[in-house]
Image 1 (tube, rainbow, N blue to C red):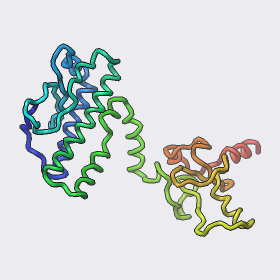
Image 2 (image 1 turned 45 degrees about the vertical axis):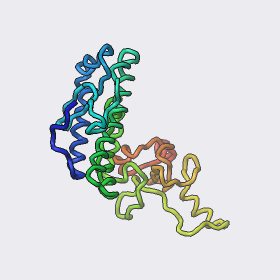
Image 3 (image 1 turned 90 degrees about the vertical axis):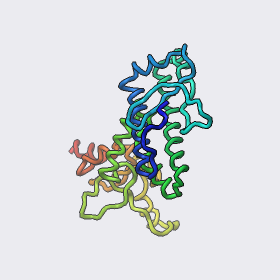
Length: 251
């Protein structure tokens, strides 16, 4: 193993940079340099481990002999499973164990240098903003990255946003108005509460769902009911629901 010839990280930023470097090396081993990695994991050899290095390199090596080790150890014997599984499944398994190892190393440094609650929280938030090794290896990071990019440009594009001022286009990226007082069993209150029902399925407003309002009939719809995603809504200036679009076409 490397034996830690690199400077030992002591601050949140240094630990995160160490994490990011090791993560980069592991991703390289499991993606762009996978042929080289595969050859090094000969099942005829002893128990082998995959190490990510802070300089974005990697190595397959025997576990360290010292007990306890200087750093948490990666999964042992990854080479033994190489020929007993489909290659993609084996790589996914190694990726999952690599993610666990990366977290254990990062929080080992945090514990060693006395990170408090706020420092540990900040470190985890920085780590959590990156796709996991497993997500990158399996291709799931592309979808996650797309949602993250939309969120960074406009936080209303992924989750239900709050109501916008009337001066802005009201067709998209808005949530249905919610009554401030509890509804009473009267005709007027029933009509007001109806504004929070989906015009397609009739279900109630839920804060964790994306909604869109029709510019023509001013009814609200679940994005999923009218097949409008937050990403599509970003490019719509004036939205017309399916019913209004049909009426206009007939006219």
